[in-house]
Length: 143
Length: 389
Image (cartoon, rainbow over all chains, first blue to last red; front, side, top):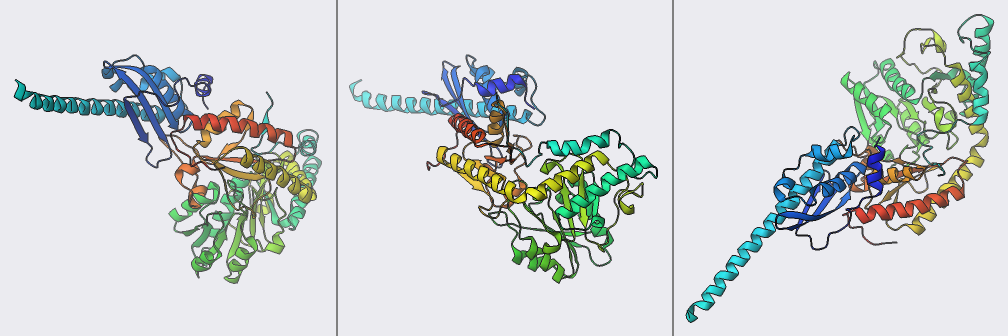
């Protein structure tokens, strides 16, 4: 049985949907593919300025995703990538037995989103570096 | 907020006439049905009357009905008792892969003690393939146990054919009719059933009482010892009030089968039509025609069934999900999986089961709530559902 608090969060999520301008996306599927967690993050200057989710799963999965987004907004990436699942469980109060794993999946999805953001940043940096190198080669004859 | 109960396959409300039948057994007729004095005789009269009613409802004899604590006990008893009583003939049992856990778990236990069990597959509509039964039945087979109708999708099995095949091979046939008995008439003689499990609480009777029909002459071992009740086959003081209610519930059900089934079918079909008109991407599970009247299993693609069930509950609507799910210990429905339904669709499944006191106005309300709830959950779902009406 879910608590009133959990059901209230479930009925009124404030972070569901796609996030425009997201620069990190994490996706996690359960082993049999029957539950899917997707979390979008928008990072500016190493701070998660916004986060949203889309989750196909039970009430526990949806509220864990919602709370994960609440907890990481305004936090720096080091904090976000080390967020323990207890933070989600503490926020929710009491999860029914067997549903704690929903918080684990949400945490895993956040980490995937941060990983995805960092990968994109790295790719961007490499691209900028190459662009700079190209520009300097082109500029050389005029030096 | 109005509360609407569409989970009658889980349990039903005890009807007023059943309750009236039970109350005296809590009052003046409180005796132990096995006592020799007048208090005991009065209680025994109630039990006898109930036994007659149960027997009449399925065209059995009074002496072929054994009261139990419910369907689970009767299923355990049927399998253990028939297997052990016939082990000198063989050790092979055939059942289906979509049985209730009170059958499947008992079969697992029987396997641990040396019996061999074949779990027949089913087709995409939940029907046992008769060719498979013919293939697996052999010289060592002592029992075939196939449920009359499935509790999750409502598919009705071809009982008479299965019974005929079993008998041709001199094999006993048991059926779990817990879900079926309130939905369609079962004549044990006509079908050729050797043992059948029934339960009261699925047909507006009380919980905690059921029965095993055992055809006269069929040998069965006891599984509950400690008294000579039920002609020495099942120890334990009889639950007289519950048995009284069970008898009445069976009588009422038997008298009203035709009218009630028509009403249930009408409600179910109205509901399905309205859902299909109103909500896109919904699939029906189970056999479209050969199924019980008061039940439908629907998959709302892209929506988790447990989440939908909780959302409906918040609006006062009680339904049941096909699969228990959690990220850590998900248990996709063994019935839907056996029918070849994907884990994702399985997790999107909700069962709606009706009673004759449900109304079209209630169904209209449920469809309205379903529409908004499904849209709400789909807006949160990353699953892309193929657009179709």
